[in-house]
Length: 354
Image (cartoon, rainbow, N blue to C red; front, top):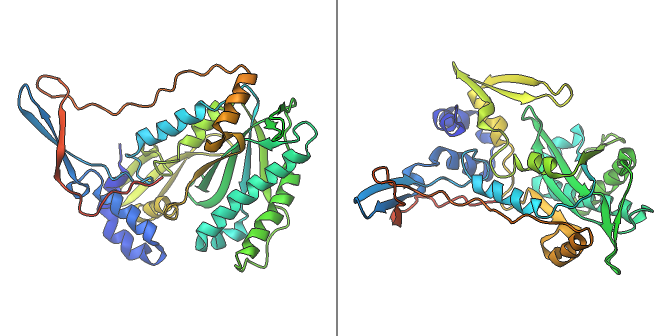
């Protein structure tokens, strides 16, 4: 398998000479994390086996959320927690996409643009739910920001996963929408456009003068929700590409595959290794910005309300099995080895971000 960290180490100098003028401090930190991942620069730890006196030294992973070989447990933990919130209802995926004319603006003002994308999308959905005759209440939503297309181009959009039901704040009454139709995408797009632009104006930023009047909002049924959660979890904490999709590295070029959204068939794209690294690193988020957020009765502060809804719907939850940290076994006697304190401190600290 072709590793992204290997490409970053090999082409770091050429990459910096080509793209340094575009890089933010977050991009530089991500590149530094990739090139030092699982090397002594990230710190070393020692494990001892008492019966046979074996010693093993391991290098820490960088822990950066853009590193494909890190944060396996973090990804699995998020999915496990979300699965505990599932309800026996139809689920819908609503996707809010910024138009092409706003991509350059969003790139230059990422924190403001992404925050406005979250806020405008959630406010739009809650407005529609409040006015819907079958819902008349507040929704529970899980929103995940994606900044990439399947070809890894810059393409900011927000996926919002919603169980087709709402709660009334005064009576805690669960109302479920019975039809396979949720909200009209064109109607959503008009309200979303107005709310997004209003937030950008409130931030006193100048938006492009030529914007399309019609924006794209897609609303589709996704069944019972679990498959959609698994799809959303793929790119939360391990970067925007799975390393198994990096097919070839030859003569300074990298070929990767992606599934075309229209034909659903696998396609390939070949770029120089330097360009490929930029396609990946350009999607590093601003420091501290959360890619995923929960709202309404799915928010972390609404556990009691969610439990009431689950009781009323007679939901039986399986025990939460979070992934267990891998044990280090002695290569000689196969007993569990004992962790000892650091034998070498990291040179530049860890990159624990989420």
